[in-house]
Image 1 (cartoon, rainbow, N blue to C red):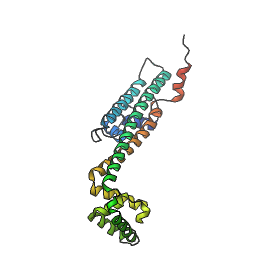
Image 2 (cartoon, one colour; image 1 turned 120 degrees about the horizontal axis):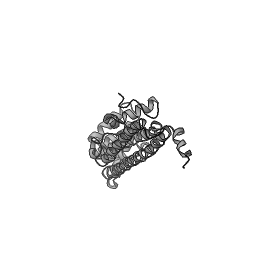
Image 3 (tube, helix red, strand yellow; image 1 turned 90 degrees about the vertical axis):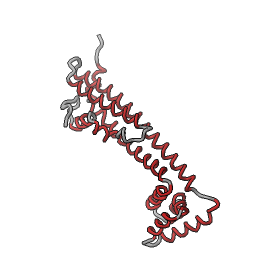
Image 4 (cartoon, rainbow, N blue to C red; image 1 turned 60 degrees about the horizontal axis):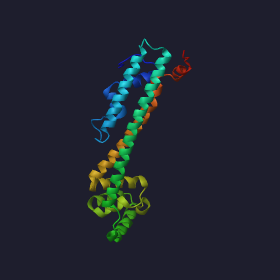
Length: 231
């Protein structure tokens, strides 16, 4: 559904982007839902919604502005695009910073609880040997998972040991590490998952940022404004 059927850039992709930017559901899909996101970055997401939505409405209004020529309209739209891009960049940076903070904190806390222990090093060495042997058999992974569910030491060595010491493929080992964390420290696992989600959302901001300028104005027209002769 088109909220405004005409924009300065007569292109289906531009129209789709600007139409979506004026819908709350569309903004939530592009920039995240401020009501369902981490409270630390909700204000950044909300301000991104407001900025892009208001700008999209102004772009639509520029089309019918009787006080500006076509060149002036595109020049004004370029200025607006730069403001929106800068704002979205700041929101993206806030998402990335909080994602990194959550990740670093969760990993540090996980290492405190599931990291190497000098007084259990001998036992952990034996467990690693056992895991390596299990990894060689078809049913071994199930045995390792069951042992991890039942025994904190197995969970700990799967968390802090490198893949080559437990004889597991890196992808399989990473899955077990996360299972170990989720079963022993669900709050830290939740923070780590939240971090991944925020990083993915930051990627959506990058996509939106790339669409702003080509949806707002035509560069060849906007550049003509610099050729104006002042009397």
